[in-house]
Amino acid sequence: MNRMPRILIAARTNPEGFATLFRAELPEHEVVTAVPDDGAPTPYVVVGLPPPGLLASLKGLEVILSINAGVEHLLASGEVPPGVPVVRMVDPGLVAGMVEWVAGRVLAWHRNLFAYREQQAGGLWAQLPEMLAAERIVTVLGAGELGGPVATMLATLGFAVRTWSRTPRVVPGCSGFAGRDALGDAVAGADVLVNLLPATAQTIDLIDHRLLSRMRPGSLLVNGGRGSAVVDADLLRALDDGVLGAAALDVFRQEPLPGDHPFWSHPRVFITPHAAAITHARTSVAVMAESIRRHERGEPLANVVDPARGY
Image 1 (tube, rainbow, N blue to C red):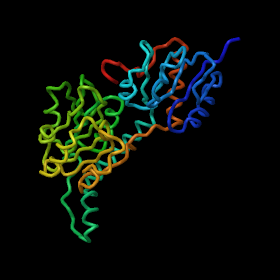
Image 2: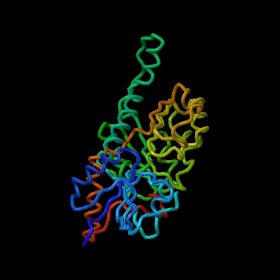
Image 3: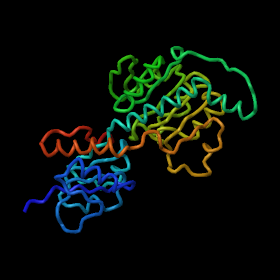
Image 4: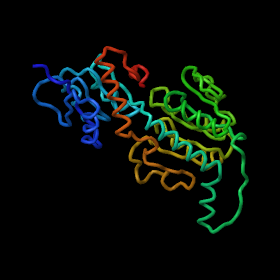
């Protein structure tokens, strides 16, 4: 008797919710939330950061579906079987979330809402100088699935937008820079620097004091990419010496952010708990189900991770 293809939901958050949605999308598949012990093949697994040994224990694994856009922890486990593709999450809901979060951070700083909040705490009524969006330069590091839509949104709001990426990419309405040698020029004179780069060997410690010093004094750093891209001590130094006016941070080198980290108490650091672009079950399951259908039709999978690049 032919078995239905099995999908294991190994997500740590809301596994039953994901399973219910998968059963509706793919009723001809068996969907389970516990590691099977019957020896039958499990061609599909849905994971974030799987527990040690899980991937190696699965017989007949054909596709790993990540519920996250970032896959560095999954790859770092060393447990991805050779030849098994990892499909990273590129989900309309996740993209929309990042666009909204960056818009909120940039506009709040641009319209002095951060500064007015400080004034409110002191009972101070004083209008601050304003600039038009067209007078601001925003540089977005990353011009792919997240960076491209974010850059487009910022350009639509009227900002002068630059993008920087590892290889050349075209984002309509934006000035494009590519390659490590062009990074300094992409950042020079910027009022806002938005990091949406993945965690790779090339992006670790990319944003240091030297790079931040290329920006306009009193500028804003927005980090929704990965915490490893920013040198924490250099960011604090840049805030204290006036190179930066504020930093909006959603990602950190260690998460949760330790309670004694100086970011918590710095008056110009604004923290969110890795909540900028969460995975929405309904939209993400639709994307993952389509990947399974493509695989079973023998079609190429989209958004397959290149282990050498790390994304």
